[in-house]
Image (tube, rainbow, N blue to C red; front, top):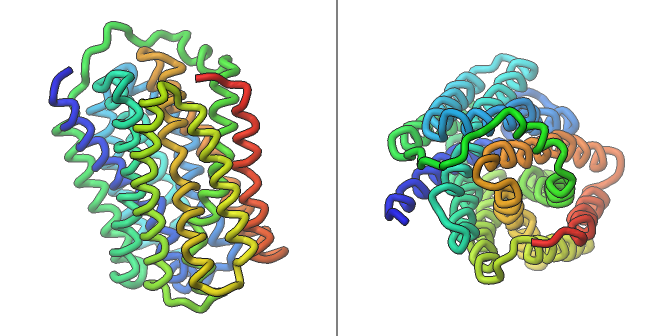
Length: 380
């Protein structure tokens, strides 16, 4: 296969990293947002959910559009729109406007998920696909590392949003210029959407793996705020823990992708990651108010396992659908994640407000265990 596949992978990964910087960057500046807009914890949960709301309504549509017109145009247009909305969010005068702009940014940027993933699917054969998509999915922690290190240092709200917006605009340009649409003999048909919505295996795969997200959100969205409020860390110091999680997640996403290639199967590693996510986050909940030298490594490991699974679920969904329907299947899988992602930050914040941080983290740990059990009947 052409060496150009590595250029496509690099451009798609960079584009995805620029969009991921939004999802992880906003939690990294959560204390600044709360102070700037005078937010309660439940209100902050709504703001953190805005991106997920936006993506919920467009992911499947972007996937279908990528199947019809190719990845390049979808990737460039969607990510450019996301960048412009993020820059505008820095000037939002109130919380409703901020939430609306973040939702619009998520809706536009969702094009990146389907388009870049579909491009990698088409340019890499099955024996390299897990590794390639693992690299592509490493874009999320790469974007997270950049966001966690840069955004708190910028201070305030306007600077971080301008940085995230500019990052997305550069990612859009890279995707548009470097991602070529590889010809696939099969073309999308009208029955592909009903097929996607009827396939019970796809539903089980997407929902079973999707509820892993609750453990991921518990660490990704709230570890900075927890360390800032409950442990009295500075925003910058707490963000370094978030950056450490991204480093581990990056290595794990690539490693488990290659592992699945060697096994010739995606689901056994996916199930084992669910169990590991449960065990490490549950341990972190137990020692949540204990010595930092014990707690922080556990939070980092729990966050790493909480992020390691997505590439496998992404690959499994696309392979289940086949090349012709891969964009639709990826869009559907990401839509299920977005639907769950709306409730995860809000639900976690509500449990903290009504109970405690420990209760919220303990409950979040149960979701990947339940997901691993749901995936047991599936093979592949």
